[in-house]
Image 1 (spheres, helix red, strand yellow):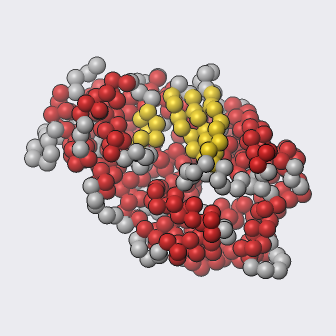
Image 2 (image 1 turned 90 degrees about the vertical axis):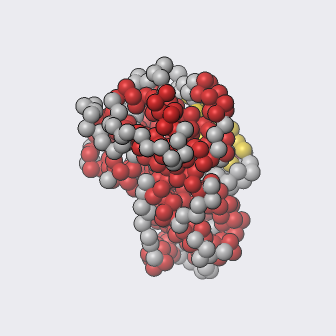
Image 3 (image 1 turned 45 degrees about the vertical axis):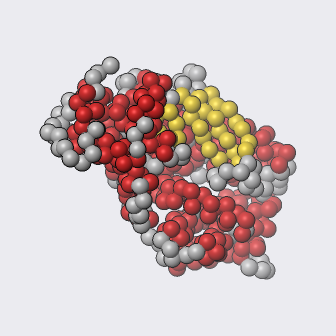
Amino acid sequence: MRSLAPFMLVAGCLGACRPVIRPPDPGALNAVATRYVELALGLGKHDPNYVDAYYGPDSLRAAAERSALSVAQIRAAAESLLAVLGDSTAAYADTLVRFRHNYLRRQLGAMAARARMLGGERLTFDQEAQALYDADPPHFTDAHFDSLLTRLDSLLAGPGPLAQRYQRFRDRVLIPREKVDTVFRVAIAACRARTLAHMKLPAQERFELEYVKGTPWNAYNWYKGDARSVIQVNLDFPIPLDRAVDLACHEGYPGHHVYNASLEQALVRDRGWIEFSVYPLYSPQSLIAEGSANFGIDMAFPGAERTAFERDSLFPLAGLDPALAERNSAIRVVVERLNYARNEVARRYLGGELDSAGAVAAMQRYWLITPEAAAKTLRFITTYRSYVINYNLGRDLVASWVQRRAGDSSEARWRAFSALLASPRLPPDLR
């Protein structure tokens, strides 16, 4: 193993010393990367949500435990490594190595920001989004969301308030509890088959499907390494039929499971880049992870293909009326654009403009959900804060990036999408 002495010396400085800054050669990046992993694991001891996945050497986990750095020390160490790295990539001939250098810089910057937050520093919603995810979330007015609600109103014409009409329709497409597992497994199999038609995955890739309760999220992918995931679905939330395809693609194929397996194969195994064996949740990597997972739904089931699959396969399997599929699809497209309302509610709630009752009321208005569902969503916002931008803004940035490189060619789109999943690209690289 390359000696870490020069970098550990810098990391021990708590603001008093200033290293000589030189662009590191590609080999020296390995030492920075190793230290980055140790610091990420160390911060995970202070913030239980910070490390989403780790499948690297046990020795680095043990080193992090032995160091037992405080949050302030981790922040100082991350900032010192940033100084060591510098911002020049001129020394690298390999484009991916330049991406790697920038990846380490941006991930370390987010780590330092998260440490500042844990130390008590308060950031606005937009400041936090920039510091943690390297992204500037757009602002939307209430009038924008009102216009979307007007479109929904035309799709759900009838007596009574729009929220009641929407809930009555959604109740008609809920998967019966006893059919959830069957529907999910068929949806996952279809997402996997469509992904494998365009992407080569490791031969050993696999996942386990579990059902849970009592979490703030709808579903989660826990990546274990060696191309293996545990996918959990929260049964506290009612599951409309279209969520089967959403979650199967997002958590599985070509979403989180494929993204993590692609990074592991291309960067950890093939190149030996240890930093990709750890996934810090509060980092720019999450915008790529969530954005590609959401856009992966459109990759696997473009346009009318999704509606046809749901109508011909999932609706009958769930014992639901296939005649509802077309209308459900049209409603879903509008509701997806309303997803940005979650950002606005989070911005106002976390900024003190709305109290919890006001936030719940706003979510009921713009998502047309029940008070119980709104309360669960508020719990997610309270826990994960500005993370919500990664789902909608992340999806739109990935979609735009793929579109610019591939146009309307299906095979070209898959090539671009696959290249993104197996690379160190981060949000600025999508602009």
